Length: 261
Image (cartoon, rainbow, N blue to C red):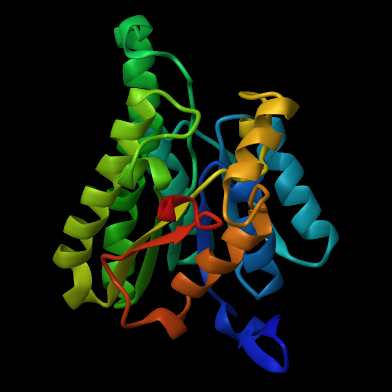
């Protein structure tokens, strides 16, 4: 249950019997989303390119009474994406919610970005969002209900804090893709929205910058700290629920006020 004071914002009933695929769910924000939606009643299909990480998330969800399946797969591979979605539909009957949280970040300067690195970063962040979204649409259309939540970033609206141009370009692309897909599928009962996190305290961020940089960035934000993965998960849960049924094609900032300055 998610509450705000005495007001109940989300309950287990919001996701009871809903089947959710979360990409990049082995750590960070993807794992936080998986754990929260499971606590609200959803069946979680945990996707990550690293099998051990996916299994760890699924094992934890099962240990606290939730239902989860771990499926290794590369979001940048149409074959892997089809396998994950086909398994989910066959095993659970449908896909109701897709959370495209898989992402990679490289801080490389433009002059040093090789073609292979460009394709990798853009592939995971943007192509993966496209491939998974396309793959779940038939199931959602058949149900007449669906929620797709894509992960962009403050980089998609401005410029990346710690990533390179390929990351910024990919996250801007996610916003354009989100708006266009939302327009295409609104008549099918499917909403498509994006979240735009700022600097969130994840393993990926901490593997990219050191403690001194983290402290410096934190001090520069109006809310002087890094965000928490659970805070992003709460926003995703709202967008994935019926409570956000009139929101589509939107991009919601969650960045401690970073874009204000």
